[in-house]
Amino acid sequence: MNILATLNRNYLFHFLVMVDSLMYHHPHEKIDLYLISNDISLEDIKCLQMFDNLSIHLMQYHNQILAVAKTTYRYPPEIYTRLYAIEYLPNTVERILYLDPDIIVLKNLKSLYEMDFQDNYYIGATNVKGFLTRFNNWKNKAAKGSKYLNTGVLLINIEKLRKEQNIQELNEYIIKNEKRLFLPDQDVLNALYGNKVIVIDNLKYNLSDRAIKRYNLTKRKKINRHWVDENAYIIHYYGKNKPWKDKYRGILKPYYEFHAERVKKIIES
Image 1 (tube, rainbow, N blue to C red):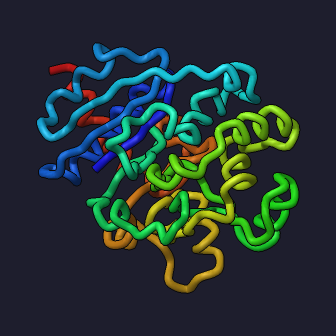
Image 2: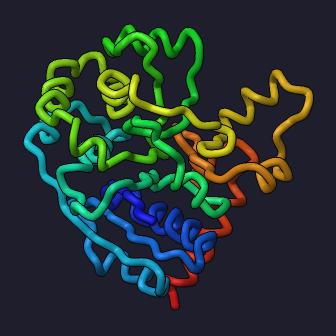
């Protein structure tokens, strides 16, 4: 299984927590982890050597476009890097699962990883529907019927993108549409590739406290910890509500804390 992560050292510890959760549920599968970072070293992640079935490929990626692309403190240049995967991944990689560092894996992901692309570029979940989807399509100048994915969990069809992705088009869109980009990487994916995606269940593959709150407002059968244990595959702590912050609100913090404590013990040992 090929896994992709892109980050800077501000999220290093949370990345280690994410990887621990991934390996916890894949004790026997061979995992090739491609970590794209310009300020993390092998020394920083040496604690991951304890996983015998994990191979880490630490790589840097430099792009003149990203040096001037729209960024913020919450959205650094690294967020765009997943969209350029064909430029740095080896030719042996045909598909890869991108995971944000603020994620906790709850189950084995083989069924997700082996999903049929059906000739599409990406498989992922969305946390917007109806009017917001139509608004984003209009704002981003996306093709009619495009979907708006949360880019924190993305199964990427590298084989097809190598044949069809136009990197120059990607570069030009990022620069020319700077003022349109609110969630930059998601807006770009929506604009250029939103009609070449498959949408999967966000409650299973991109679960958040925000999604739980929205769901529980309208449904008689509520999502609780038992439902999460039985049904969810991936928790994604997107937005500002992070489980390592004092002002966190929700029911999903214990899942992060379990793996955070494991990582702390590994680092200290």
